[in-house]
Structure formats: structure tokens, C-alpha cells
Length: 55
Image (tube, rainbow, N blue to C red; front, side, top):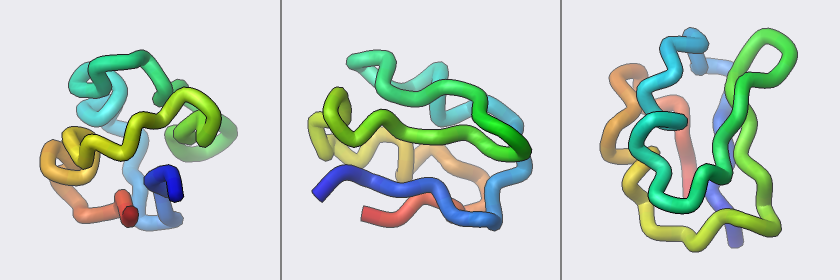
């Protein structure tokens, strides 16, 4: 199952810069992960300063 960005996202963009496949983009009020592109590596979750990414 792909990682998901929760409402704890503060739109800092750190996760998008860390994603090796470019699966994260800026959404409406928070960043979003494209489930079809996500390779479930966990890099985004480790980089998120607010812990807003769950896998």
C-alpha cells in the first residue's frame, strides 16, 4: 500500500524533494502522494518533520 500524507502536513515540501521517483506533488492545502508511482520506500516518511506521512 502506498504511503499517505495526513492532515498534519504543513506543506513544507521536504518530502517531495526526497522522493526518488517524484511521486509527491503539492495538492490543495497539503502535499499528496501518487499511489500508482509510490514505490513504498519510506524515504518521505523519514524526511517529514511533522510525522504526517504514514505507510
